[in-house]
Picture 1 (cartoon, one colour):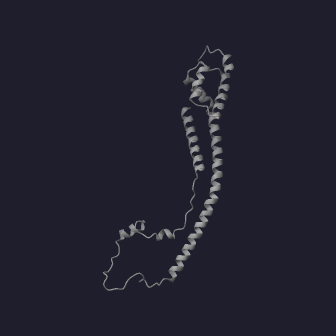
Picture 2 (spheres, rainbow, N blue to C red):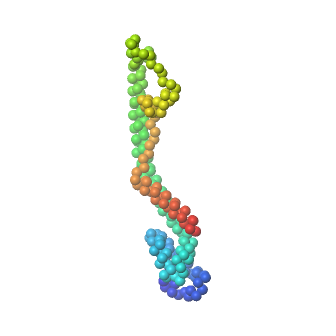
Picture 3 (tube, rainbow, N blue to C red):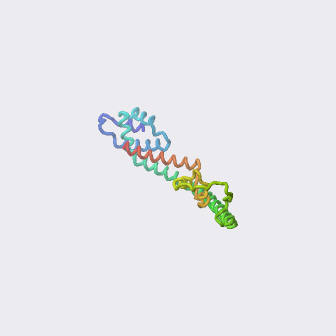
Length: 194
């Protein structure tokens, strides 16, 4: 790049030499792929070009915008593939766990039905028939609703609900998701800069 720059006379600074643009673009793309596309890169450009940092920053960003976006999309696609592999592996485990929970839930439900069938059904179970106790009042309607919310209830409703499918993300998956978010933010930043 330095040898190509040395061949040019920059007497007319108003127009950047067109034959240097592909070289600058190629260098910037290489810096992007190596992870060196940062302030140090842009601070170095004014040392080899007779332009200030702002001009070189603006020109370089405009030259590599499409390629930079393409590279980001390629990285996103690779991360999504890796994430999909992790998810598919975890899905098998989640399905097995769900099937096991459904089987246990059905066994508990059948056991409760069998226990309920053995109980006497005269409607008086659990009531002592002594004359010395005062009659009990039923709870007002609002208190019954309060019990159903789980603060005073005995979780009967929870026992009757079928199990739900649960899928747990591991740290690797969270890392992939965070990297994808960062790449998405990078695309937004590049678009705003352009």
